[in-house]
Picture 1 (cartoon, rainbow, N blue to C red):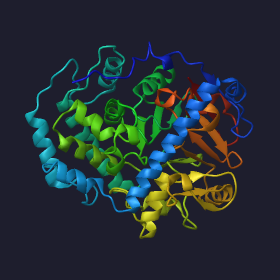
Picture 2: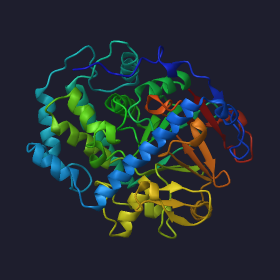
Picture 3: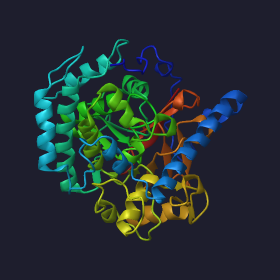
Amino acid sequence: MGCVESVPARTSRSSRPRLSSNHERMAPYKDEADDTSSEASDAGDAAFDAWDAMEQAEELSYLEQQLKGCSVDELMTKRFPTRGGALASPRGGGAAAHSQWSSVAAALTYDGDFALSPPYTLKKAGELYSYLRSPNAKPLPRKMVYEMLIAASHAFEAQAAACGSLIHVPPPAKPGERLLVCGDTHGQLQDVLVIFEEHGLPAPGNAYLFNGDIADRGRNATEIFVLLLAFKLACPDIMHINRGNHEQRDLNERPFANGGGFAWEVRAKYPHDELLIDLFQNLFTNLPIASLVGEWALVIHGGLFREEDVTLDDIRAIDACRQPPSVLQTRDDTLLFDALWADPHDGDGIVASDNRGGVSIQFGRDLTKAFCARNGVQSIIRSHQLPKRKRGYEIQHDAMLLTIFSASNYGGVCGNRGGALAPDDRRRGGSDGRAEAGLLLWM
């Protein structure tokens, strides 16, 4: 068992951020990063560009392999014959799978320096947060991870059965309340700890929405998932999690060096336990694809769709309780794939995304405007891409589209800021009482 690799928040590079909060509307927003990024060293720019190119090449390689019909699930079943295999049953892993996971959990004992057992409370979740900040934090007890994932799987299965693939997240209703939207964290636990340190732990009136891509690349996604789920199980309305394109088995089974790594992280911390990886996958397939925050925004990991006239009801009806398809044969396949993989471009229309293998698409501002008008939402909040100019956000499509990326100094080399988004109650007072959007940035 190795130690948790993230540096504790109080001593990490990210723990002393140059915070910059903006309280203006998104349209005229201009952060100081726009001015200072040009002053970065050539070496820093080269590292940023090289990492961005490598990331695109990794995902291009993955999509090309998928088009060739290379199923990692089949390969891993041959290598690990005792593993559970693909979870293809309707919503949830099925009674047999849950019975097996519960039997394993019952036979385990709590070990290590820290344990959190049910019932889950905000006090216990806060204790987990404090433990993960410790310089001596070690991987969490296997029994604790099993119990929490089983409980969370039941909760998300029930949510998926009731709401489908689109959930409704209430916007802040009173002065002083907040909903913070966070983008990709990719296993960088230190960034999640910094977010909670600077903006408060999840609590009633201080809710969070994490927009996917928690898994892969960084080596502490397990701890991020468990920490977020601890708050979710303690108080469901204060923590929301969307699915990203990296919450899927085929990418998780790729090595860290090829843009994956989550399955290998789990194996390193919990050896010889393929059932635990299956349990994570069951959780992933029950995460919502998108969240609707009142009329303020649709929050979705990748973006919009190549299909015409897509409605919120269409998104709600997506069959997402499966691994994303490698070949797009139906409208439902295409909607699921685009929700997780699509990117924007600055023009109009739909173009093929050569950076992601040609099967993925880029959508233009006309599609964003039409989608928002058709569905009665003001904006699209997405993640999925490292924003340019080393900042944690990017605004496009006449300020109707915002990319949020929360992994600062991505991969340890990019030198970029992390970003989060929150409605700002200091600008309340309009006729409709809505809050304006504010960007929260850190290094």
